[in-house]
Length: 124
Image (cartoon, rainbow, N blue to C red; front, side, top):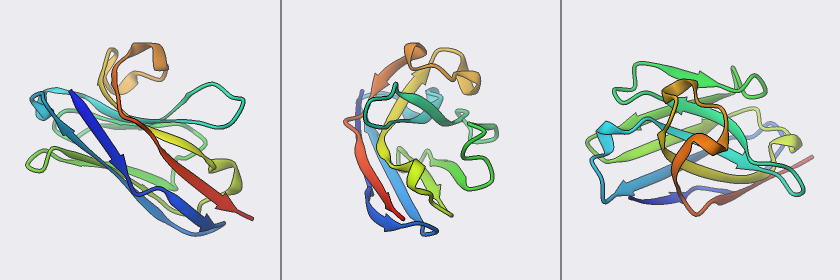
């Protein structure tokens, strides 16, 4: 499967961004999808996950209430709407497919497919 993430950029604290990840090469609707992020010098960490139908979601505590994950199975695309951004949200954001524990997956080691990453920088 190929995952192409886009939408990253520079934003001021308190601002918003929407990331997109277009998938190809595999039946998109069969995969639980997610977003992870990696800040400089830190391990890749879980951000959000969404079930195959979109009916179930899971979020890291650090983004709960500020980020929203969604998907459009007709467009083979998963989104991450980020609001009230903070400088600590600065990281490379990675799209993930086929999470081994479904929406409960919170470790990078249970992800089977990765996108190339898109950089989000939040200035204070």
